[in-house]
Image (cartoon, rainbow, N blue to C red; front, side, top):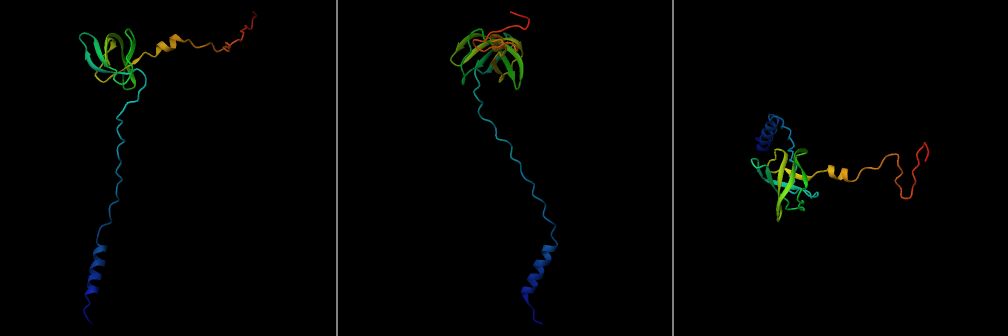
Length: 144
């Protein structure tokens, strides 16, 4: 019998594969959600630039939105919660406004939005039983 080197190589390769442990399953790598780099414009929203707790005022930045008027009441938001209230006292220069702290403890980065209750008080909701169509007459069930 003659020596065949290819038979030796084939035997070594086949025996080497049998002794290896099974490969570990590849775990998928989860990518984090991309960071939101811009904030949507939603009306008059100011961001607290500086806070002076001793004199009870804040400086608000309105770079991307319209400025509030003197005397406007503002809710102070941190995340999804209202944490205080402000009143615009001036001065109002370029894109900044100064507001007095009415309640709460503002921090740099908090958002100031107009108070939502003003809109509800200015336009009262119509009564449920009243007919609000133009030209409609109302009559009560007990008589005119």
